[in-house]
Length: 129
View 1: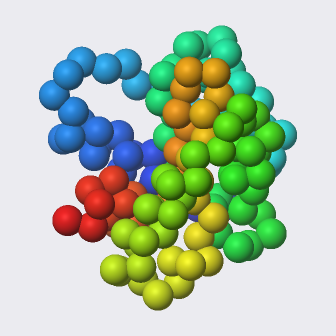
View 2: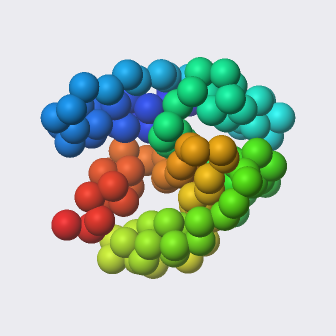
């Protein structure tokens, strides 16, 4: 087991990028599809989050199950988000095509699966700028 670097990197990026007040709900979840799906349901259905950003678990490895958990709770797939994230990542790493990042809608909430590495999170959110 290794320490999560994605959540602190995402929190730091949001603090730099957003000027409007926001409430940050942080959850660290094991790479287990059922736990990820249950957490997403809680964030959307119980806590009323309007945007949910996940980090990590989007690669081709057997333990990378975030996209499956996200699809299990989705009402609609938003394919452009995954396509755009992979396109941005291709500017930095040729293995970006192996990424399974995606975006979905559940109720009125956008859920985006971001990469797990701090540098990749920043590159993806900044659009490769």
